Length: 214
Image (cartoon, rainbow, N blue to C red; front, side):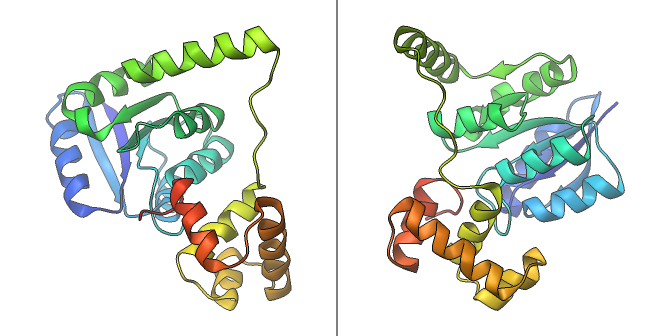
């Protein structure tokens, strides 16, 4: 039996995905989380075989949670289940250690197969992602370029997401267990690196980067 942890901030989506997974004789959803931080806590208490993570969730995105899971629970396979048919998110999913990238629009067709592929240590990519991967490889091979480095650090990304969600500096400090001065320094660095002026521009950037939903 493949034990699965499911994380999505929409209860209706979780219910539908759970129906798909629990309908298979060898798949069992053992836990549900509404955000990435909750998913990490559940995985730490009872590590699943497989984590199925949405990208855009409150507090911590699926990509952030996946990055942390690969560190703290290296035996857990990870699938990204998302509405975003987006090359940037696809490549970031690969970077953080996801075994597959599945679109919600075709989850009823692809998700079960993706789960089985992940447990066989085989990648699962939807057709558009394969095209993107090949195109990116050919472009980099032709000009010798590397995959672009991250614009901000992991901690700065966490701060950016929480700022965009409307949390105060003190609330962010409490959520991330850092000082108020450290939050302020990270925020200043983010604005400088990204060439942004205020919270409104930070929020627009966070939406484009998939850190929060519009």
